[in-house]
Length: 346
Ligand SMILES: C[S@@+](CC[C@H](N)C(=O)[O-])C[C@H]1O[C@@H](n2cnc3c(N)ncnc32)[C@H](O)[C@@H]1O
Image: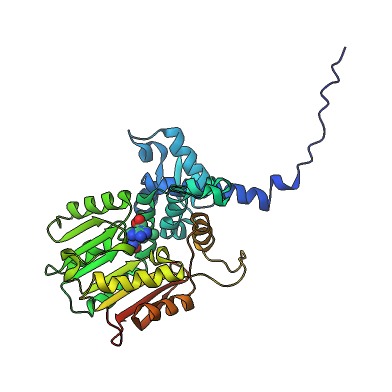
């Protein structure tokens, strides 16, 4: 007798199995693969060689199945193309390589927090250390994000300033101070960061660069700095991609005002950050980074100020804006060049 309990039906696939919803799903996997391929050196290998095979890319250190899986995932997005055993850079490679810092920041730096978003949504759950981010990855991602426009702008501005001591607040990887100290042997520098992962990374980078005597990294909260010997001679203070951590408004005004006391000889404050974007998000207008940057700060309970709110805070804290430079990468990035207001004492 025939078993009629299982009757195959004609395959009519639900609409979500291909098309927009399927693409969203696959995009998430591709973003993860881009981040992993960056950390494992696969993107650098493809960038320098133009192509590779799994055995070469994996070498003795990586599992061949994982490397093949990552490369096959990148094929979906045309980041790489496959022909037999050979993977070559595809039409999407150049942009993805240029944007690798954004993906690394998103996936490795912030992925854990995005995955527990529902668990940190209720006010009762937002106490003590209610989230974790990989701050080493955040620091590396931020450095890559700043490389194309922000750092050249800093070099231009700093090149026009006369100083011997500089401080970087929320210094992350420490790369900016290392570059500045390498360029000018007369400069000494101090970096401050609150996160152990960033401080460890910066200290190692400073030691690797042989700058131990001239670039010092200290762990601390830049909102609560006291006047100390190591800060006394600082003439230029920089602060990149962390200014939003000063907010909300009164905390920011107090923190900025405190910088004038902690750095009594500061002649310039160069503060660069990504500001809040007005209007609704859409695939046509929303730039890379924007959605991730704004949502992750919502999850952390950190307010992202608009440009106008920044101007209000500078004024209230006794810093006068002398110039403002807008960058396209990261989108909505602004570098504010400030001097202590002559009319206000520290
Ligand atoms: C997005 S990363 C930017 C790193 C670096 N400035 C750069 O441009 O690549 C922000 C850094 O600010 C640090 N940070 C955040 N709040 C801070 C605070 N209150 N005091 C000191 N560092 C802080 C974080 O630990 C992190 O390393």
